[in-house]
Image (cartoon, rainbow, N blue to C red; front, side, top):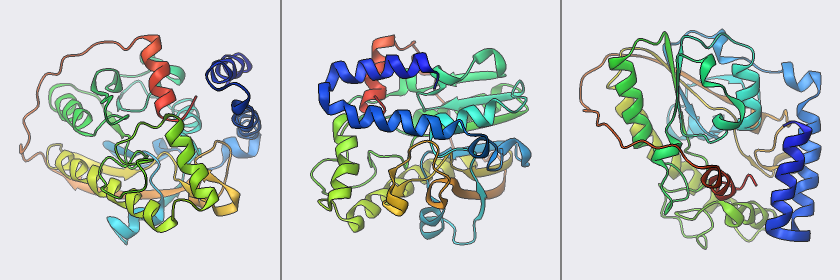
Length: 299
């Protein structure tokens, strides 16, 4: 985040919340400064150093959650960031991406990426966003990824699902509507605050987190049935549940719960179990982008 970006973001935050925004603004300044230190920048494995044809990104998926829920024998790498912004900057800023199709549900693509540097940059969040859920469900991403891999000729493809990042739209855990089927926004930030205060139990939060991973992994399995090639599954970063005093996924934190992520590889063949559809596409307005980032708890 540049100084100009920080000032603009802080101003928007202050206009929305007044003096209540000061702690978050201070945290943004602190974590942004940490993330620019040389040690943090060069720490971790860039996914472009690994072998894969199709790369699945599960947003905010911890290694221990993945091993507990999906594959206990999954390998691991250290991520190049503890937040999506950091991961995008340190992944795509240090690699040749001209042969990569990036199919993303993560809104930070607009802020940090240039479509001219990719074979294709498909920002599915622009037209696949669900306002009722406060996030983008996985199916629009699966649809676009299968269509792209079958009909176009990228050398590599990355699919960036937003789950298991909260809200846990795949869970029925009742914790006051602060994660399941609630927009992020203030409820998203309040969720981590409530965890700090002990109002939401670690057990309930973890169950919702796990349910959300199981939910998105059904789509990952569908994807793997409908592409041919080496498919690797990983995450941009994890989530902290109070370890080292951290909650969520602030930038610049080199702790294992945030930087150690799964690396799970499969050889896949397109079995044609899924028929793609042509979605109605449109470009989100600047106001919609700002509102969605706010829903996600980033503004």
